[in-house]
Image 1 (cartoon, helix red, strand yellow):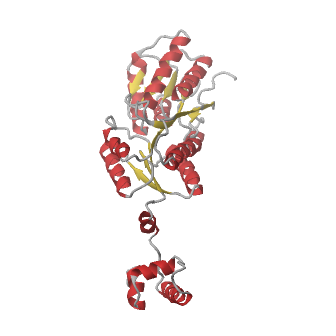
Image 2 (cartoon, rainbow, N blue to C red; image 1 turned 120 degrees about the vertical axis):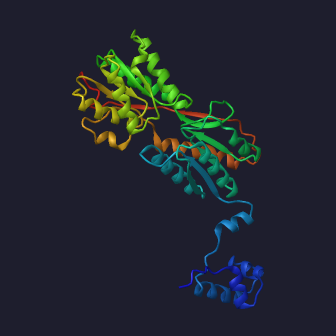
Image 3 (cartoon, rainbow, N blue to C red; image 1 turned 90 degrees about the vertical axis):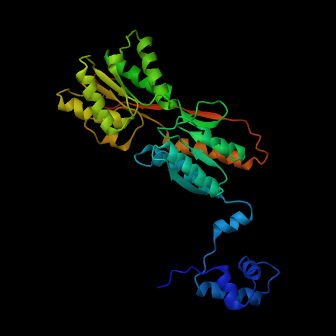
Length: 342
């Protein structure tokens, strides 16, 4: 069976017409007679001709496509962010081209080259775990292409971005643990070059200080916040012989890993160790007990980020000043941290 896809050239050859005549006929141009249009449309149906919408759009100087780079699409957070992005983009008549960096800075740069070569009209980015140098995004600015970061963003007032108030969410989580009577709260933190992890760690320290509790470096473990990292974090913390009665982790995967190790070590949750995470992953309602966490407004972040990008795309002057939009988190208190009635 032939896999050849009929082209405008094929139609032109069979009908002995020029490619430009075929193109105008297919677009119902007034300069082409009705008889010729009928011949062209009939053959197009017979050959199952499918127009190349991207090529047509590029000929008009527009791709009608937005590019998105995310670290991964595993889990709940980025999947819902993408849902929000696609819903708003599609309503505005745009397609979405999604790339995954797989938490790799070099791959992120390749993603960016791919989107630029596809002539997207704007780009949304959440930085990879290993991205410390963001100079590869300078090429986007040099091209005057709208660029919006979300969630994981560069530390610069010159970028447009949509973020959650990670500091406030983490502060609420730690303050909740303190309110449950916890006095020795451990923290499993992420890479400190990332804004989200740094803000959550800072909130942890500030909440302790605000409530007169000492900071103990033996109760802090930094990692990449994967499930295996959470397992290892709990093992290390238990092995340090520095007692703790709660764990606040910078994401849900890490605290879920810690939960497994703590239970295997005979620690009751929340009676012996109260747990709180961050992200509101779906599995937090499948653990026993259910995990206390911070909701990140995933879909709202996606919708807000793409609306900001579309405003920039619509601004032909490219004179809009950088905007940073901050969404408010919500602490979801569940059984993993409830030692007292609230």
